[in-house]
Image (cartoon, rainbow, N blue to C red; front, side, top):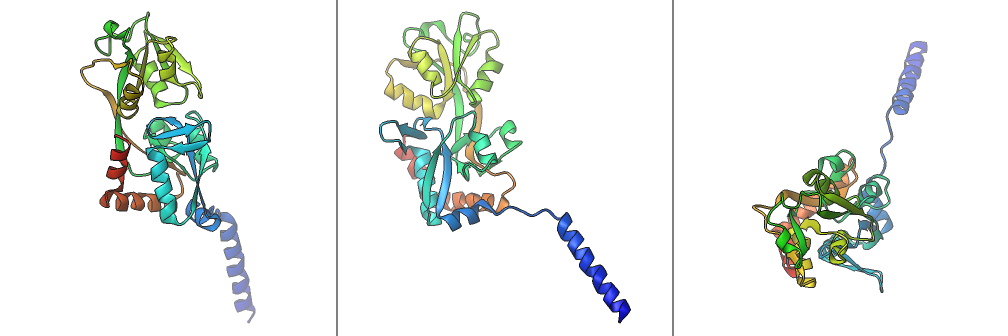
Length: 260
């Protein structure tokens, strides 16, 4: 009896030690969303036509907004859009300020700290200027000159690209709510770069915006939703949701709606 009792004590002690040594895992974002009935999405509201915020109403619209609204609908919850900017977009996911973001470029630096969903759309980068300056430029190298001022928004992938691509140019980094294309529209800068997605929209909205002719666009990149890196339950759910929606034509129809 003493031996059995001693053995039981050892087993109990081992179990307690193992429990203490094993880290407790946080609840998945999926359970949090379903328990509280709210999907929290970080969005910048400044990437036309992906996410645009009306300052008069504080309401959002765009491709991303439609996608996130549809995801919330299929989850059976409400969607709450949380204002963020490009320099804090990733930190908001990492710190738990929101469960995910709308579209963001997949990049090695972001992958170090955050997870990504499967991609559902891709972008490539081209340079733009104004009609009265288009004669100065005939390719990528024509931008990389000391008398050219190139604008980029702080915290975006465009900031990284302009610094790498145009080391001889003057780089003008602006912080949101200021936007890189506004710097060029106002004459404070000569060139900005942006995706084919935003570029086509800006040319329609501002007739004086011109796309600089180049041999080929640069940095073709898939874009996806940012998610908590270690939350595989939530990542799996979102990835499978994307697969289902692709199969049913949702992403294609939404892209067509927004001219993508």
